Length: 405
Image (spheres, rainbow, N blue to C red):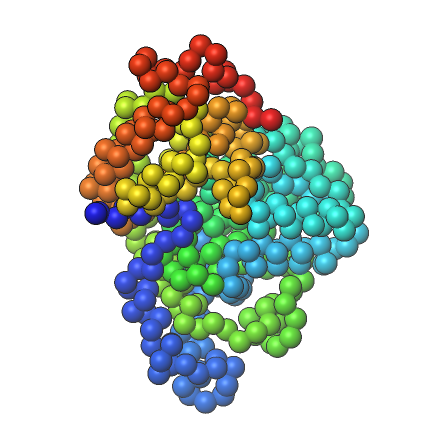
């Protein structure tokens, strides 16, 4: 059976060049970069080379503004909690309803500690109304955290406008973005985003290993360290550097920068898959349709069936994808992103995400396009809401426009 991996927004395979770059630092170049002998100095120089590569990918003017972390979750915590600790008199935070839990749950935890939290809604297409942001900002707003692109739908947010509005409201408002899903898929240039103070990223979303990421913090931004201890990372993040993974992240960023001009090839495959599935499957919607989206992401709302069953059938067919439902530990709670987008009740549990990469080829797309419609037909045959003879909803089926509770 041909295995097809179409879950690259969850994690990516380590690129062969990345593995090759990191292996020496797991073997003969194992030294602690804080040590004073020559071999340790070689490791330090490799870390700084990686820092420069990450800075180049995000368009940071100074590599020293990048701090290596264990991933985007730590970077997000460091940004939000570090800002709160640096300016405790500012007690208001603004974010969106569709942020990754690594941002949204930190904001909610700060709310439990006494901060005021404004959560901005999105429309059916997953788009942010900037007028809501204008209304939410206050004189004591500490920071605004808005993701660059959504991990479930691929919807891209107007970060430049968000930063401009925050800066025009008050130069003391910090702007943070979780760029984890966007990096390596679309150009990210902090030089053209002068109002963005902090940016989080993770290595395993761009073909580096898990367990490494980085936080960009603009020079002068008031952010206190999250981890206290040694002097590593110029005192901004204590703990011996994970040199092998940092080197891997740097190499992955170099490769991502090289491959950015070919993002249109990934988008063409995504669009071809989208067209094929829309043609073959009735009562199918695109979550995020009408909004600018990442070139690799396709989130489908399949009415009258459940995502968990779809994923099981896809897995049996050798295809890896993700559902819009959090089907873990027996929970069938719909995704908070899809609920915030007011995805109809009939589809909120039946949403499936296919996310491609530069390693996805035409044969992979053809395999998904040939298998997925049959899975949907088979599951609808056992749905109480579907008339298989007419290949349409039954007259008594719930409306496809009714919002999920």
